Length: 253
Ligand SMILES: NC(=O)c1ccc[n+]([C@@H]2O[C@H](COP(=O)([O-])OP(=O)(O)OC[C@H]3O[C@@H](n4cnc5c(N)ncnc54)[C@H](OP(=O)(O)O)[C@@H]3O)[C@@H](O)[C@H]2O)c1
Image 1 (cartoon, rainbow, N blue to C red):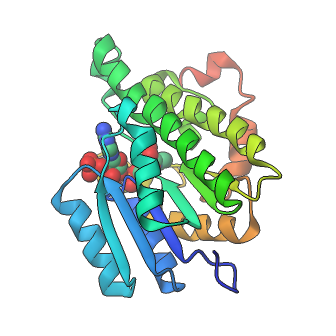
Image 2: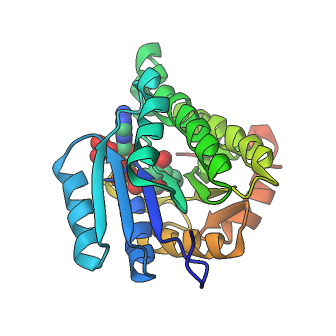
C-alpha cells in the first residue's frame, strides 16, 4: 500500500530500461519506494536500471523478462509477477518505440510492428494489470502516452496513431476502474531528451526524463487522470486540436 504520505512503496515497471521510467523510479525510491520490479527484454540497460534502484536504497529489486509483442504470454506474465512479488502500488507502462516514419509508411509490416509494440501489446498488458489492481482494490496504473497521440500529424502518423490508440484505450480503461479503488493515470509528454529521440532536433517545449518524472509523481499525488509534460502542453494542445486541417497537415515533424 502507499505509505502514510501517499507515496508508492512497491513499483512494477513494464519497459524497465526506459530512460523516463528510470527517472520515475529514482524519484520514487527517493520517496521511500522499497520494492521495484523491472520487466523488459534482457539487456545491460535493464540490469543497470536494477542496480541503480538498489544503489539508491530500494531493498527488494528484481528483473523479469517481457517481450511486449508476444501477446499470448502477457496475461500469464503479469499474473506471475503479482503472484511472485505481491501487490503493487504503482505499475508504470513505459514500453514504446518511435519507429522510422519514412520507412514505416512504405512498409506495412514495419508499421504493424510499431503499432503492436506501442498499442496492441501495451493494451493487453494494461488490461491484465487493471484486473490485478481491481482485485487488490488499490494501486495506480500510469501509462506513458504522448502529445503526438492527441492529434496525429502527417509527419509521424504511424507512431502517433499507435499512441493515440493506447491513449484512447486507457481513457476508457481508467473510467472502468472508477469505484474499484484502482486508478489510471495517462501521462502525455512532448519531446523528451532520451535515447528514443537521440539525434533528432528538439521540438518546442522539449523536456527531460527527470522533469517528466516530477510531473508523474505530482499526478500520482493528485490522483490526476491525465498529466502533460511539461504542463503548458495541456493548453497548447487545446489550440492545436482545433487548428484547421489545411494548416495542421503542414506542421513539420
Ligand atoms: N522520449 C520521448 O520524446 C517521448 C515522448 C512522449 C512519450 N514517450 C513514451 O515514453 C515511453 C518511454 O520512452 P523513453 O523516452 O524512455 O524511451 P526508451 O528509453 O527507448 O524506452 C523505451 C522502452 O520500451 C522498451 N521496448 C521497446 N520495444 C519493446 C518490446 N518489443 N518488448 C518489451 N519492451 C520493449 C525498451 O526496452 P529495450 O531496452 O529492450 O529496447 C525500453 O524499455 C515510450 O512509451 C514512449 O513512447 C517518449
